[in-house]
Image 1 (cartoon, rainbow over the protein chains, first blue to last red):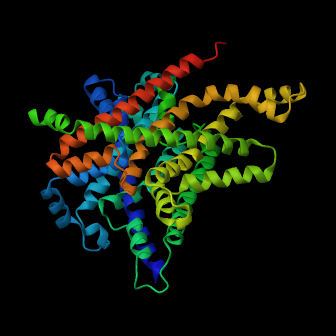
Image 2 (tube, rainbow over the protein chains, first blue to last red):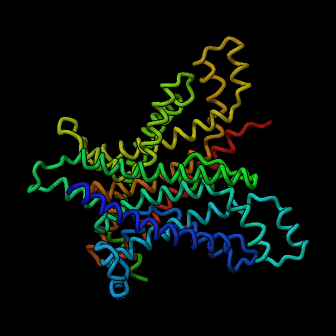
Image 3 (tube, rainbow over the protein chains, first blue to last red):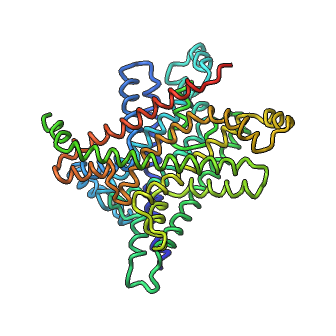
Length: 250
Length: 218
C-alpha cells in the first residue's frame, strides 16, 4: 500500500522529467544553433539568454515562475490538460515546474551542444561548403551528426541531473515523490508509522536505480556508436556546465 | 521604474543578510566538498581493489541521489541524538553531494598525469604516498582547476536548495519573503538574481585567473 503510494508519485517525477527532457533537447538545440549563428543579431541575444538562465539556481527559477506566472496562464493550462494525465498534472503549478526545468536545462544543454559543434575541425564545415552544400544542409548532414554524437555522454549526464532536479518541484507544491514521502512519514493513522529516514532511503534508492539505468543505456549507446562510426566522445566527469567551461578555455 | 530601485532601497539589509547566508553555506560546503572529495579521489586511485570499490560506491550513490533527498535525510531523518542545525545539515548535505563530483574531477586529473611519471617516481624510490603528494597531485591540481571551478559555480546554485528545503533564510528565501511582503515579485527576484550572478560571475573570474597563474609553461 505504502509502496504503491510512493511509486505512483515517482511516476509523476518520471513524467515531468520526460516532458522536460524532450523540451530541453529541442530548445537546447535551437539555442545552440542560434549561438553559433554567423549573424550577430541572432548569436548575441541567444548567447545572453543562455548565460542568464544557466547561471541562476534552478530552484530560484522555479520559485520565481510559480509566484509570477499570470493566473490566466495557469487557468488556460488547467483547461487544456487532458483528463487522463495523473492528478498532480491537473494543477496549474505544473506549468511553472515544467517551464522552469526547461528554461534552465535547455540553456545548459545548449552550451553542451555548442561545445560539441565547435569541437569539430573547421575543415568539416569548409569541405561541406566547398562541396556546394548550403548552410542548413551542411549543418544537418555534416556538422550536427558528428558534433552532437560527441556530446552524448555530456548530454546524458545533464539529463540525469534533470531527473534528480524534478524533486525540486515539490517546493512549489506539486504532488510528487518528496511530498508523498513527507505525507507518508507524518501519517499518524498508519500502523506502524514508517520512519522518515527509511522512507527517504527508499526514495533515494528509486532515483539511484533509474539514474544508473540511464547511464548504463548511454554507455551502451556510446560503445555501439563508437564501433559503427568511430566517434571519439568527449570525456565528462562531472555535472552541468563542466563541458561548457572546457569549451570556453580552448 | 521608481519601484524597481525602491524595493532594493527598502529591503537592502534583508538582501545583504541573505547574500551572506548564501556565501556562508557555499563556504562551508566548499570546505567539506574539497576535503571529502580529495579523500574519495585518493580512494579511487589506490592499488587496493576493495578501497577503490568504497570510493566508487560513494560516488555512484551521491551522484545519483537528489540533493533534496539527502538534505531531508540529514535534517529530518537522523535520530535525535545527532540533530544538526539547519545550516550545518544543509552545508553538510551539499558538501557531501558535491564531494562525489569533486572526487571524479580529481580522479580524472590524476589519471591525466600519466603512468610513466608514476612508474618513474616509484622507481626513483619514492613511496606511494610521496609519489602521490609530490609528483601526481601538484600536476593534477592544474588540470582539475577548470572543472572544479564550474563545479563550485554549480554548487553555489545548488545552495538555493538548502534554503528551499530547510527554510534557511538565504538569498532566495529572502526574495520570496520580500515578494510576499510587497507583492513585487519581479523586483525582489531580480535583485536576488543579481546577487547570485555576482557570486557565480566572480567565481568564473577567479577560476580563470587561477588557471593562467598556475599554468605550466612548457
